Length: 108
DNA sequence: TCACTGACAAGGG
DNA sequence: ACCCTTGCCAGTG
Image (cartoon, rainbow, N blue to C red; front, side, top):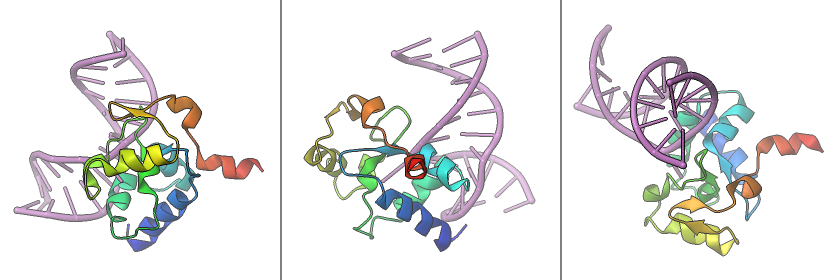
């Protein structure tokens, strides 16, 4: 697992529409490669790539589990709120409706 | 090489 | 709805 895998995770993450969120597992399933844990690892390696909207990736409960890895812990929430996503107690409100899966790309 | 650690997830109780 | 276990796999010491 090297840079190629990381790039794939970054590419998928770039496809998440503003105002929507996806999950580590959804990305792992879509790539049929690696695991949800590795998606988190790949996103950790995206901190320098400012064109990757890593704030749109949350865990399966809609929790902002990666917030502490941003420059400051509030960045993830404020970026989501700027896109209209409501966050309370580090959790996306109405998560089922805001959730977006990369598999939607195939439905067209 | 072994053990442990995670931006995780699914299923059972 | 919460807690626990199991599977996951690259990094790290």
